Amino acid sequence: MRLDSPVVLVLEFLMLMILVDDAGGLIPALNHSPWNGLTLADYVMPFFLFIVGVSLALTYKKLSCGVDASRKASLRALKLLVLGLFLQGGYFHRVNDLTYGVDLKQIRWMGILQRIGVAYLVAALCEIWLKSDDTVNSGPSLLRKYRYQWAVALILSFLYLCLLYGLYVPDWVYQIQTEPSSEPKTFSVKCGVRGNTGPACNAVGMIDRTILGIHHLYQRPIYARMPECSINSPNYGPLPPDAPAWCQAPFDPEGLLSSVMAIVTCLIGLHYGHIIVHFKDHRVRIIYWMIPTSCLVVFGLALDLFGMHINKVLYSLSYTCVTAGAAGILFVGIYLMVDVCGCRRMTLVLEWMGMHALMIYILAACNVFPIFLQGFYWGSPHNNILKLIGVGT
Image (cartoon, rainbow, N blue to C red; front, side):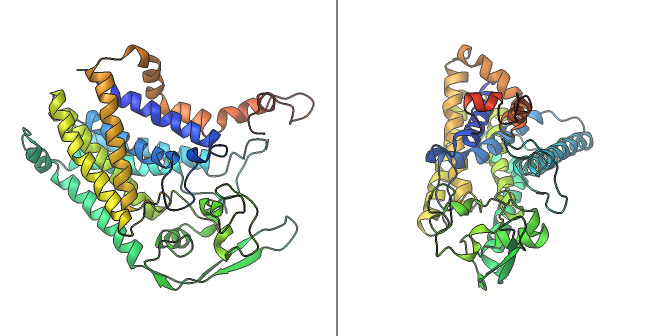
């Protein structure tokens, strides 16, 4: 039986990504939360990782050669890493800036495509090598067959929590160029704490500064939109007079430690794909999907209630659970509409776009197509098609 819902879901996540990039500054609900909390934009990345996991289960349901499959998965992940460096590492400048190129001393190593590539590779290798030969005829037997994959997810979650709450974060300094012709200004951030999950002194940022280097992080931190750092909060704006020292410090929302939990989201999606592979009855599938979905949402909200806040930038455990559960709810809803009720005619165009999601994302959300159009102007670079239709102004 053909299954169309994953393709449609990919398209919906893709459209959300593009909408967030283009309209997030105008509509607060479409912009990322400055720190703790959830907005519509904060669901996009985990939803996409979730459906990558679902797709991997379908891709590797019949595997002939594990070595060959591993080689192909590694090449795909490498392509995503290279694309991410090229598109999000700083080579392309912002809309309205007809220049390009990046100083290798300041190239951004991590990004959205890099995170997807890492999560895809780990989940793919787990699916290729970490499943037993057990026969699946019930929920418990499904868990037994993929018990090693669940062990990986638990180990990664435990490792993340140990590092986030166990690492000591010392005081640190950074420099920024306030004016082009002036000397860089040095800021000192006081920490000396352990287990802090605030913007300045968390282990996620410390690991990125130590391993990647502070100049290779995202230079426009999302916490700069917090009330402490912007008089126009929740939007970017001028600093308040009493702004903390960390407000302008680089911070990567797709950093190393936070990407560990992104892998877990992909592994959760893998489980939902296993249910498609091993169970053919619609009712059974929906029941086996809704059980983990409900548990994830309840557990994530409970963690947030008891102090482990939902935080997209840190990719906290509560954020992982709530967003994965929400992805499960949406997935079941689309499955009911498309695959059970047969409402396919209205989704034909969406299916095509879902199958070409990466190309569309690169052209639209990474500003490749807008910058291409902006290269054609009359008289002055500011007189271009994008300005005429009100984009990038």
